[in-house]
Length: 120
Image 1 (cartoon, rainbow, N blue to C red):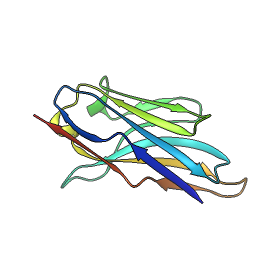
Image 2 (image 1 turned 135 degrees about the vertical axis):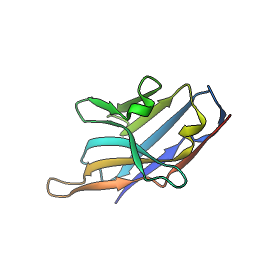
Image 3 (image 1 turned 180 degrees about the vertical axis):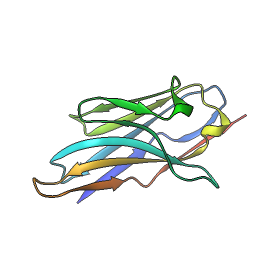
Image 4 (image 1 turned 60 degrees about the vertical axis):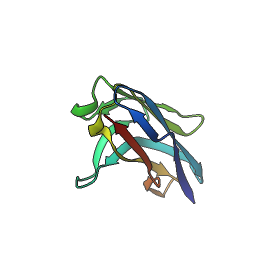
């Protein structure tokens, strides 16, 4: 069984920074794509940033230049460094990962979510 455990959310003032972490544990054979999604009240879940196993990152236009995604393959962990936060970044942030548990079993997993609140 695979689990994704997030940490690092909280309350921060506009202009501040937070760093989210997401660690995979359990039957992890290999990790392909890892990413962060967010869900704000009344809005659909959106992809904030993602990174491939080769290290290629992509970002939503709304966070480009402010957020940085990175991964530590040895630790099976993905990070999201968020800077210059604005109230519109307030949401529950979910980690997601495309994980192979064996040579024949591959699926997407989701973390439980961590709340980020940015006050103005």
